[in-house]
Length: 328
Image 1 (cartoon, rainbow, N blue to C red):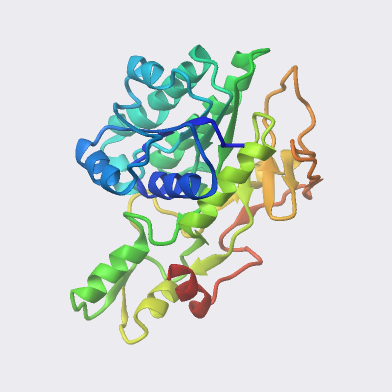
Image 2: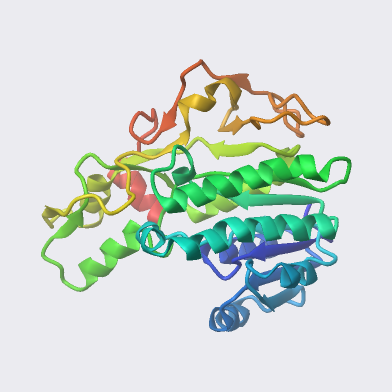
């Protein structure tokens, strides 16, 4: 569905944007791929690798609605990946996080509606479900904005959906490269915030493939959640450095012991499909009411009342060996 189409990726110089671009170029023949981000050095470095004739690099910030409207002229699909994502940084710089993650989301919506974009998928996070930190709260607000945007679109063709998933193995700023850096520097121990801490685990490519598929599945208003395995952070540390002891340092500001992707409060609107869940909108759309069947005809089943999908009670778990294989 991406052959001959123009795709814009906000925050496109990040780990996700690079992998998404690579995948689009390998599997499809897009008319144009627009990388929209604010860091000229990262754009320059990315352009050295991805310099196909269809590539375009737009300097801009999602906080700037006018620049977004210029960048989205002639675009068919948007992937909104731009966000301030570091939990401690958001706790100490709340207004900056709000400007990018909430106001930026609204600017993407406004630009998509102004230019008649066909489909928009916004990337969310497990931290947006029952949030206890500012980053999660801003992403929940962003999710709600994108879902409600379908009502604003009304009879216009633009449709918005959300993709929510957990820890991306090896992504910048995550625990894996942090541990790897410490190990390379000759650390005598690895810091662990809490011995019970768990996280959902997904590879970058799996995340990209999930987003690609959901452009085909989406009707508008859904929150897509992949069924992925969990892992204890202590097991991650043991897999990377089985010879090193652990030092318990305590939970950082805004951190959870376990992450949730489908909260129990949404169980009455959550549908289980073969390899993913769909959380239907809490608001009613005049144009669409049935979310147990997607645009591909795949059918889901309403989960039991009170069902919660969280990393601590997950039925799928990664072994150390499987984790190392995914890391490769």
